[in-house]
Length: 301
Image (cartoon, helix red, strand yellow):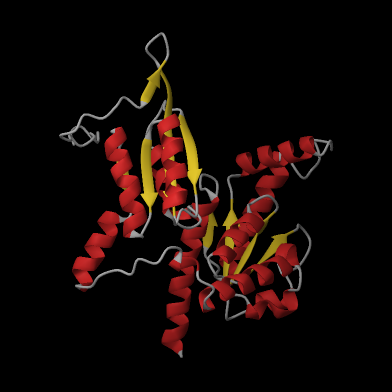
């Protein structure tokens, strides 16, 4: 590694060229084969996180999920032969994985088991061997059903609904219109958090149950007024409504955001600015705040 650039490892075997170029010498496409014995969520997340670090690469993704037998692997191998490219896998069955690895070696295409470094480090730390059980993280255990409960609770408590039992929530998200309250709550629910969200509307007081809530973490979402005004204007345009409505006017939006900030401060609610944050990033901040909130509550008990 030099100058902040990451260079590929140098291997003994010469790999076939897997990046196709056009007649002008520019890159045309790169095939990525993602192979998993379960839903493919893990390998997809790893690839997505890595690919955003490289510009100008047109990656064609081939998904091979629920690969658990030699017959299924043969189908994958045929696909790789048709479109040679990098193979990234999360296969835990040694026999199934061995067939694919040997085929990749024979075809001279890169074979990358993305979990090996982590599994190896953990095995060394625990001084124990891992169990080769495909899809074990998706077993229908207590955690799985807790996520289902969280999703149902969150759907029922969207957009200010059923605020009478908000004390049963883990997290309550509060904010003015178009600050990503619902998608943030749905992401958190998928991580097992029971969420409710409440929209702040000018002139409408907060529900008493929200003001007095003690168990859940109540967090305020905010956004840059100019950005928020643009988003609202685009929303009105999409709905064929008047773009000059007060709902999207910058001055009105600026006042809404300022008043929301004052409300958050008055109640001592932490604030997450979502202006330049993705849903995942905002949710990560909220989960961190929830951990601190929970620790503080347990310390008082």
